[in-house]
Image (cartoon, rainbow, N blue to C red; front, side):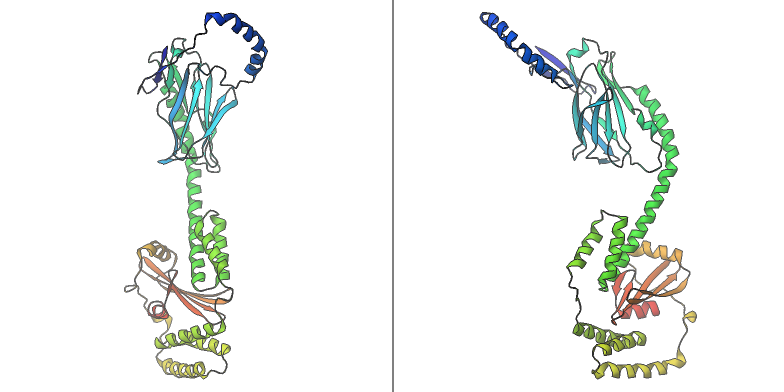
Length: 420
């Protein structure tokens, strides 16, 4: 005894054979008595059967098999989508798509099913599969739905989705082709109505995209400023920025890792001796390039840490003499012509530099402000369609750090490019 397993894509035919055991005639009476004894138990067991039935495991599987089926989002296979099999409004089976977006079911004949696809953050879709009124001759065979792909779309607040409350496609048994196939006329009409609603939703989607771009810009700015503070060893403020970035992107790994790194650092990252050595080094470096303001700040801060050391005091006297000599030939900021011709800019920062040029006027824009326990001088130089951001951060304990487009640089770079 055999039956044919038909594919809606007419891609293959599977032949299955089933052998039946014949009970010897000599045992007929005993079997009848046994059946009478077991009848109540069998009837009770029968009542417990599921929608799919049960009982005889040797029965021929006369059904529609869905196996070459996938759920996608664009070109990506989508895992974790719940696929529910619904009959007369009740869910009779369900499964989640695997890491390849795949799922499978076997559907019995004589029912009309709805396959419903749902996942948080996506529009719920469904497909109808009508297996009612199939000819008895057709139900002798099993069928394969063939390749099936459901494409999911992201849900955006404010979108109209009522067209997706109706199945987007319908499958039925075609007596002419003798296969279960998609109803092309139905799909054509549904596509037209869905396309109309999609056009209406486009404005909502575009607004959402703009909001996401703005949030991304805010996130990038917070991460940039947090990295600056981290390099400047102002861990408290850096942590605040990383925490703010996490509020925008709660699943982002980088700010979370940086916060953990901050938590693992010693609270006394720099002791008094280390601070003094750093301040003297910064003061001497500033003196070499004649940045007398920075040198003066560093030496004065060093004196607070070691009041008896004569070195920083002697350096301050040299600064006073040098500043007096420069007084007559000083050039005002307004008379300078700032240029970025010889300034090197990395490719990764080119987009940031282009945006600066759109926001700030040509030449120099300087901002000075307090942030927590430090003083920040921010200088933006715009030359043509390119802008460069420089920062000088002076901590209350005297430490001075310099940055160019968010990256640490030396005092020399600050003087050469930001001061010119």
